[in-house]
Image (cartoon, rainbow, N blue to C red):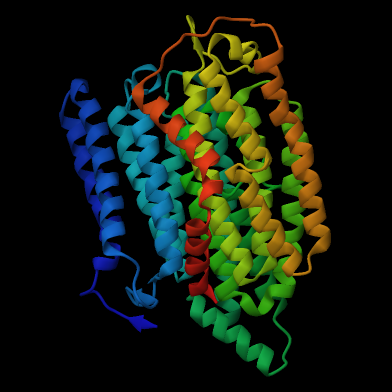
Amino acid sequence: MNSVGLMHLEFIYAELALIVAAMVFLLVGAFKDKSFAPKVMKFAMMVVWFTFAYKIFEGAPQESVTLLSNMLIVNEFTYYCKLLILLATGLVLFMASSYYEEHLADAVSEFAVLVLLACAGMLLMVSSNHLLSLYMSLELQSLSLYLLASIHRDHVKSSEAGLKYFVLGSLASGMLLFGISYIYGFTGVASFDGIAAALTNAVNQQTMVPLGLLLGMVCLLIGFCFKISAVPFHMWTPDVYQGAPTVVTSFFASAPKVAAVALLARVLTQAFGDLTDQWQQIIIFVSIASMVVGALGALQQSNIKRLLAFSSIGHVGFLLVGIAAGSHQGIQAVLIYLAVYVLMSLGMFAIVLMIRDKEGAQEDLTALSGLAKQQPALAFAIAVLMLSMAGIPPLAGFFGKFYIFMAAVEAELYTLAIIGVLSSVLSAFYYLRVIKLMYFDQASTELVKGAPLALTSIAAVSVAFNMLLCIHFAPLVDAGKWAASSLF
């Protein structure tokens, strides 16, 4: 591992560019009139896409590099996750560029600034190599997301969503800080490498791991479980997904999931790798609970966004199966699943934005009744994405779940794999229910035809990705394997 100091900040140019751009756009939004706000949105989108292109051009370092006094780390794993986060953020801003008139008319500049700050926080989260940088970057992301949830100030549900998210998020942050204080108190170090060395020393000397350290690890896991909306800390998810503007919900369902799951994987495999037997039990329980609650909860939903909220809880459960495996194959499966899930999720939310009648956006599932006769192309796109989320072959979602369950079997977690497969079968019911509404029920309302280019483009790319990935899946598998190798 190579360590560099303050003179080598090229490894975090992306984060610095996003933060500087956010500050500039904040000042521009304050001093310019509202007519300039759409340009701020476009400039923000350009900054994210240029940053994405720069990361691709820059490439990953040949070996792991730490900087800023070991606070951050850059390697193949962080590079892969950062590309996913930037891709998701860029697509959300592209989606928002055709959507702001309805829900963001008075807060377009603020939306762009908050998305950039949240994205910067996520990039720093993924690279965090110290408990302090972990907490600071996570809070930079969280505070931005609280404000985004309530950005539609004239909408009661949006304000309620932001308040619920903030109150429960503050509790989770408190638990996270409590856990960090215990971990530091019992190890005397706060870097991931230092914690791992302290635990290795305790194992080699065959001394008992302090109970306070285990308590700190549990509190840390509680904080992470809230951030990824895992059961039993999922209670905020359906209300926030429904109450927040749909384009904000699409952001919640994509980039923050990648950042939080990636950071959780790094913390458990690198800092607490010697306590695998202890944290594995917790992750298995949370994984099973998330898969089951996600499937059962979605069965009762009549609102599309609430259904997708419970669906996201179920997907988090599947991701945790790979983390529970605690192996190179498990992390590889998680990275593959994340890439598939991000594109599935954004494609589905782009379609949700297209579901409108003469009165405006429609979120009730009954609005999809008879859609196949009114708009066959849109119904086909929804069917493809729903079947992919259910894990039906040969769509991309099937391959994501296949690698997750194979990792569990390789780690001899047979019960977890079986419950995962059964949960996947159960979840297929509510996905198929949507298809049944579109193709076999009579139309209850006439939806408006036509949609902005941004929405149709994202939906088309998502559908094509899910349908055609089976033809050449190897590059994604190789990329996941390459990225996971830096953690082992």
